[in-house]
Length: 363
Image 1 (cartoon, rainbow, N blue to C red):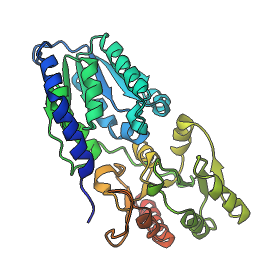
Image 2 (image 1 turned 90 degrees about the vertical axis):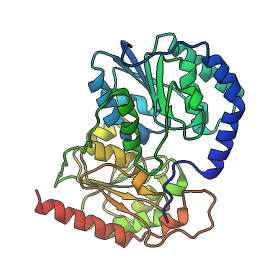
Image 3 (image 1 turned 120 degrees about the vertical axis):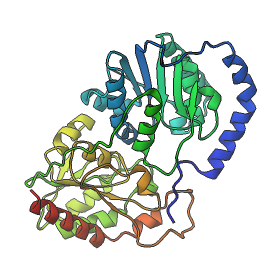
Image 4 (image 1 turned 180 degrees about the vertical axis):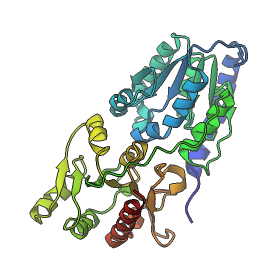
């Protein structure tokens, strides 16, 4: 059975314990903060924090759109990680994009870096943030937002820390990440609807393979990628994206003399090139979300993690999962490399050919 939760029981236990310990201190400090209501507040500056992963930012793009629609005269600031900033600027996701490196996104417990990020939050708060959103439900994110001192702040108290927000909300951990963001902004009067980009089918483009994933337990085995290329390369144009993880596979492709192209470029160049391709095949990663965002058909390979929570939002998206529930001994509560390995290349090839046939008929 797939797990429909964002956080593990262990994570929740320790986070809520820490929340309970610091509750008296922060509750006391909150007594000295002024209270505001949206009905009377002139919202001039809005902050959205989403600095974990590139795909996370892409999944909240509908929410950013609806925030701007609800507050058209406000200055919208998006706080994201360094690799995402250039793409966010290129896509014009907010009026201002601020890149930041946050220690807990890399499990960095250096005290000096935590003090530095608190100082960063407080300097940001000097600008007079009227409204702040954080969609993660992570206690550390919530603590960051509290240090910004926005007049009104909204976020999920899933891991504790409801006192870090002026308007804490309860998260439904069983719904898609994009929908969770939309649910939160409704509390500020936004009216989101389901957004799916118009499908783009480039018959003469390449079938793009992006093997990269932030966690190796999300990755599909290299041998499976090689076998998939062997199945497809005689009849279709294949292009493999050069990433830090793809070096060994690319060497194997060249050694086997398979007909394959390769693409190398930064994130913006990748997006501009991808929009002219036929479709994309990738594990649960940024590439699938970016392809869906620009309307390119996507085949996503998922292991034991629940695709209902994070799969690309696409009209012609296909999600491939193992045929049987995970019963492997694994070192992660949600991810399983053995489940990824259980998905045979012929299953992916068959799904691709069915998708292309369907798209040809409906062109």
